[in-house]
Length: 416
Image 1 (tube, helix red, strand yellow):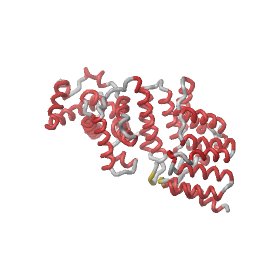
Image 2 (cartoon, rainbow, N blue to C red):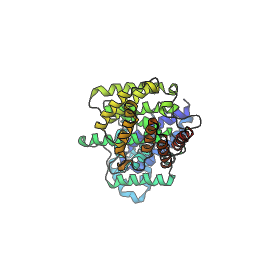
Image 3 (tube, rainbow, N blue to C red):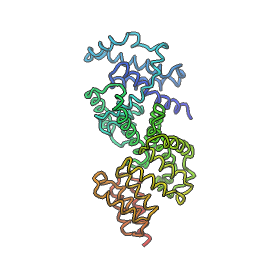
Image 4 (cartoon, rainbow, N blue to C red):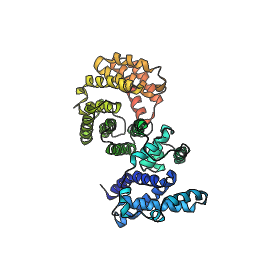
């Protein structure tokens, strides 16, 4: 790995820890984040020339603390808040954090920061944006590019999220125990949404956005490191690894989508599959089974099959039966219908889709028509399948998916 890439990885890893240390020590979330960004920029400029300091995290906290206290001092409109901070923190500590404070500096506040970014008062879009900015260390421009919105729009979204945290009186501390498990599920859901947007971009010219899947996996690893005994955390990390393992084979040389059954499995990432299988095997036997563990188990069955024809669809149907009970939602039903069609025939799968036609959560979602088209094609009803493929192609805003669906419809027309 190139030196620049290693430095970038180190700074992304340290960013939430440094921000957490400042917010825990001084408060002022928004000002702390600005100070951390300045410290990261200073590190990216100075470290390649001068070498890594003895304690990179301590260096960043020292520099960020100086920037923060300078900012507080220079802002006359915040004089009272500055005075309160100065009264709480000795002046010498505002200037530098010495070696004797390394124990405090070494504390990892990543999980606390994630809980704060996933505050229930924020919308899902704001939680995602704030998590990527504050915990992921992505710039506002990078996040805006990933979600195909103007940088100014994303900056406003992040700014409003920070203001909402301030208005709601969000504190930098872990939620009380009764609330912690529920908030953790929000954190995991946000990471799941980030990963899914990266794996199948909802709009735009590219099927994948690897910067988002990579960031989701990195953050899931961080949560797993902090909560190694939580089976759903383990399940989510396993699910991401097992799914991301297929990415190299998921598009052709022309960038077009290649469905799972047609993928060249030799191109799958076997290291990621081995790690994912080991994680899900570790999580499943130890306690109550959650939806991320079950989704990871389904992904493992697919990834371990030598070929599409040798996939154990009966096992997958059994896992979906459990998933429908543990974490029912229309997308689960949609995937369940495909698995049922593979074991009991396409009509059985089509029968399951009828319940989704009146589900408002799936209104306007192209995947219902895409799956229906696939099952109709399996059943030999080419006219209806072609119409469903075209309807799905009109609805989707992803250009690679649109090309794939239009291609399927065209091929069915050619077979007549």
